[in-house]
Length: 107
Image 1 (cartoon, rainbow, N blue to C red):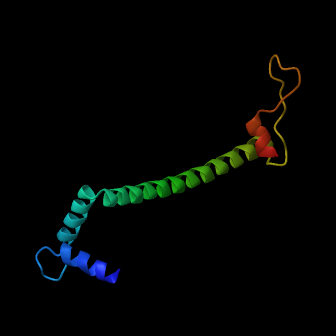
Image 2 (image 1 turned 180 degrees about the vertical axis):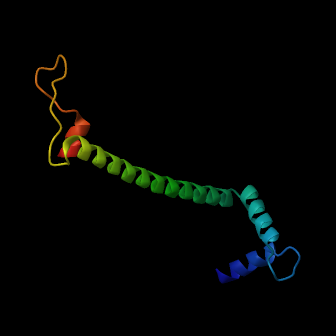
Image 3 (image 1 turned 45 degrees about the vertical axis):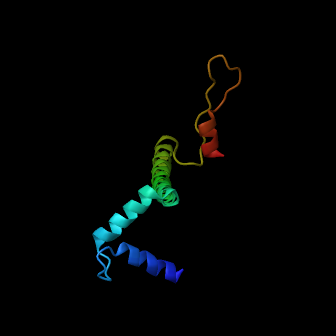
């Protein structure tokens, strides 16, 4: 593997300076990405993983914000989680029912 990395470095070093300039590195990666299907697929997989990670973080933050807002609303409306919301009978429904979201919050 170390030998492969040295060969890769040597191939990327277009001017033979034994130093890899930023432009040489970027050009070589771009060329590899657009010409080699396996390299292209690897780049796409890395991009998707980055997007997935970003979405996971964003969803976690939004979920925490939603929990906070629900908690505040419940506290203001019902004095906290210890009390259930009033049960109301829906028109045309014989027995009183609580919507599934409210029921899940208090169970």
